[in-house]
Image (cartoon, rainbow, N blue to C red; front, side, top):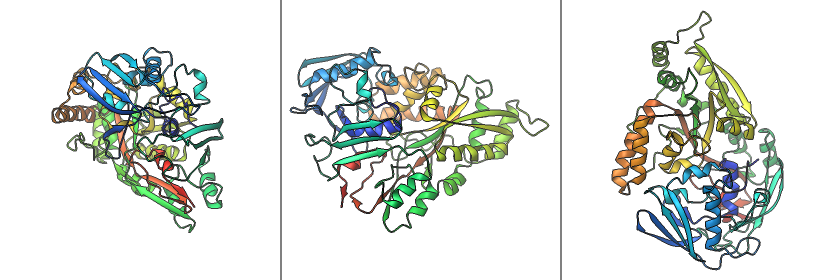
Length: 477
């Protein structure tokens, strides 16, 4: 179940995937991660501290209200002021004020240059809500997107319907023939494929089925499998306030003790690529030369010994706890990690939690380790600032593990202010090298985007980030 459908608040993948259909932002991005128009037809930067957006005319919210600059100003000011409690507030530290001189112009004034400003504005990272929207918008969201909200039954389903007045955005209006979509919440991994087999479901959510299940469903003549390289990255995060995990050698050892190639081959059935950075390898700033953690249990043992954690009489050096969601894939991963890390003397306790509970725990730092995925946010270098800047602890960002490195903070500030791409790339290479050495995360792999659907659904083209935009252009026979 999505945590919060208010697009100013929801940061989990499920919320953002639904919000991406209901809401628009000023800008969006294409498959190559280039910034393109959305609610803004165009924009200019007369100086590094000023962004002037020219809005589309004639756009309406789903309830018929006209969209104007006042809605944009309201959306962002409620985030900046703290009127809505949102982690997204930490995404825009450089914004000083928002001005709406007329109905079709919005001006953002920054207190310092921010090279990732436009990316952070892109859908579905943020969505524009109507002026004066209250808390009720989470239960009955009103946007300008290609689909409008119809109903929500907690932990059961969400229903959307085609918006006949959609202005088009970055897809031709009404280019597909799907008029209504019911998103059913099916936590049980066994039930999902059964729904597809018997025809009570047409589409399995992107990456919502286990690799073994996908292999089995591919043999069904009534089903089709679409698989494309994706940018969604899986990771294990550490709490650096923990006296064991505060040792860099321990974090590095756990990375060396993780046999990612075997997990990808057997657990993920080859539906992923090993990751050495949060950025996907096709990104312009990706640095392939950083420290690598190929499977090396002997190296892991040496590092743990050097850190002072000798094996006890029972062969155990220490115990750690890994929090995961109750998703089958997450539980299987934690079981495999427990077996692999046992080989180097680390005992791992597995703590599967309901998604909302787990996110609440990690937000307040109540964890030793957890594993999740980044969906979309890792397609821009701003992710490094959001996750690893010492000032970005919740609620100002997602530095949930309280990682601190003054040198990195300085480099993060430099890259954020650098508008020259090649100079920024050089700074980002140093950033990636430091993060790879300090290892506040174990970056595991990039998932392929896999979608199983009934053959009556055609024209399914999954974006690299795994968003549900394909529903705007898909057809049903």
